[in-house]
Image (cartoon, rainbow, N blue to C red; front, side):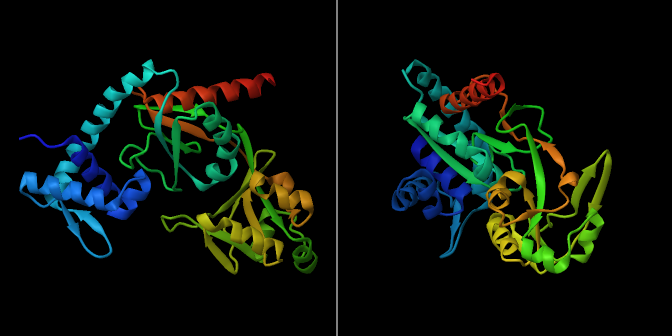
Length: 306
């Protein structure tokens, strides 16, 4: 029994996306065509693969078993077809990156425009997630994370600035009203603006370091926002609601304008920059290979000042 490869790929796309509309948005296709392809596949196999409701789509047990086997198989097919890409004058295809919000905000803006200008036949799709995920299972080619433990078959390449700091800041009006902390533990008596990861964990404790002395504090305050809404915490800090603790580069415009004043700057912790990571297979998809080479060239120019 043979099934159309396009129908199999449509099933995998819909199952991973959790819906026909979501899959169509991700792939730039038509929800009706995807629905027709999955229905055709189910008819050919004689078994239901997806349970459909008005709100969601989820694989049946048979669908889950098929998805587990098809995912790696289709990835191999894509790799095989991508070999032909090497014979083109310029790489073409789609590159999917899974990145945290901080990388989307602070790292990619300097890389994406020149990369797409250099490779106009590549389509870049950026998926923003702050949890650590299996990039292949998520349907992505590569990811960006900070100082993560990577599996043995993953390769990590430095991307973006190699030295970053977490900054703590508040509006001058707030500090005039509540006082200026002189030690990280003083933050326990202040209104602090906290974040929450998708997992539900708070972006706390806040960690500080000075002359080898590490201090962790678990502050509280009137506002907790999801990491994806960190700009709200920044705006609240500017309005005088409390003290914010975020990437220095994120707060740089407000610090430069004076809307925010540095707090405990000698204690700001330095950490290493992010890494681009991807499976260490021998044949990389042409768009990913082009991006890896581009990132490496940018890093080399930054080191030499070129």
